[in-house]
Length: 331
Image (cartoon, rainbow, N blue to C red):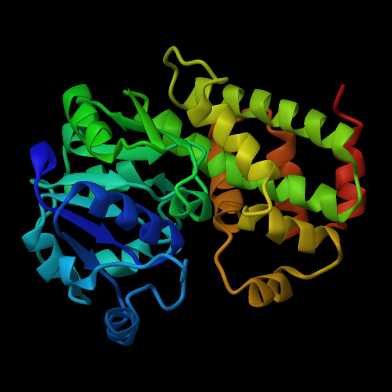
């Protein structure tokens, strides 16, 4: 099992499934928490996740499934959380086993609603997990491409760089290249903001703005992200690193990006509710937009793209009007 001990996947979506594939390439067995027992039974019967990445087949004899979160947490040393951020609190409310002795890796690219905390802050403040036991997995990484074994670059952030390196070494493979960082907070906020900017990109796509403008939008998004990160966590970082700029670009441009798809539907005239119903998947950026807007009320960073997306999604201002106002602020 290496220095990371027994591994558990916490969540049953597409990114959780892709990470499970990665883990089984490096570990003889893994534990896997899924909320729904019927989904677990289908998985065992079919040999693949019945709802996500159905083309990825697993040797289910190497997976210890359970819908009991306490059973999974008790049995594992490293817990990789991949649940959608809006549901993290409800999953953890069932927990009676303490987390502070576990190594927690959050692969959740979102903020805990109501708390307005990135996930590492939530685990630290609410569950007393020390910083050296908290890591974040970031970087441009669509689950669909990881599942296909396409070359992917990931960054493991942790205050304890030795632990970050152990985890990075474990997930490295022919198609997964890794690096480490100590910028846990910066990586998490960047992963939230890139979803907001991907919605903006999708809205502009739905309004039929072209590639020329999309490039200007992404350039301004990178500058806006950098302004926010500099205020919220002022350390030396390079915004053009793949974990920041790379993740922003792939989420803003790729057809795999659910946030871009969601934004495109909004730009075409869908209501938020109808777009969410038709997608049948969670666009984290919708929730992240409101959380980031609330957080920025106290920080006062100049964030015109965030403001525009918020006005469209939550104030119901016409996308064409709001984006026109945004374009006038760009140079």
